[in-house]
Image (tube, rainbow, N blue to C red; front, side, top):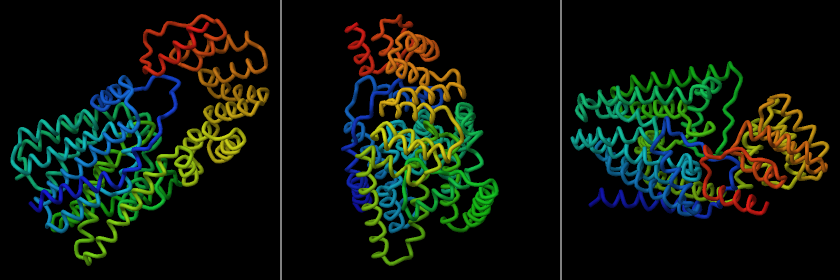
Length: 471
């Protein structure tokens, strides 16, 4: 009865803390079909495809993600009593349920699609602890189709519960998961080659935010000087070694080491555009935090969990306003170009120009910034200046279809349709599935390339059909 109450409390807290996410607005119509990670995450890709095909309303997607998070919280509450004292298990389950770091995963569809991995991995761990090895193996393998980082489940369970939990089955799962993880790494390798020096900063930041979740942002700036990056990696290695030696005698070290291992896994295998879900690492980091708080006065623990709920609720409310969450991301990562690029189209032209200009001062030259600046100039009715920006972008990358489409719009604003048509034909030769380029060329009466390979969403097809039917 006590265990059931804890599971119910964790599930309800998980729903209550992130209730404002139900008000997230629909995203703007994308210019190209969604790119689904079939190779490394076929299960998550299937969920995203279903959401795009069925045109599920944003609140339904958010509610589904919250329901999965509630299920994960209840599963953790069922799992931990087998490894912890009742008080530590309750603290860990409630911290996990209410932690603000969950908000990004719940709010971003491509991260929310990986949540079934946590559900399946936690269910597998629970099955192994109850000596249902065949069911545990099946659930663990299914988790890999949603998130390759779930491969860490078997070695983490071996670390925490020993071979008694799964015996040779866990060893085989560790090998199979390692193979799946390495296969997924091939898809992430180009991104990782530029990001790997900052793993130490990522890990230290995640551990700090797990304990003190302040200044949260969906786009953190992890870049530091090489010497600082090296020091961060050394710090993680030293603390990890201390946790390894302490883990043989005390659960605190074992859970911390499990958290570092899970952080390393999700860091190496980002879901989309470098974004990383912390749903799996938080299971271990919440347990680590609970072991620290276990010896404290229960009133202090209650205040800590209440603070987490308030922070989560506030951060979830911020996600309801795309401009507000974008401004916060830019404020906390002013040197990154990505937050500015995402925010600029939502701002008035004058503010967008100022924002992109500031980003260009900090970021290295890149065609995306020049293209964004050109689009903002077009909105400000300054086509001549916009034309120069698109030319700059094309000097850096002659095959930049977005810059070609932008330059075509500038030519149209200058009443030169033939030049615009030529740029649109070039843009569609590079990216034949661009909605923006197709729509503009259709309005100009130009020939459109075949679209048989374009996996457009229903909304994109309707938008194109409305334009082409009016020709």
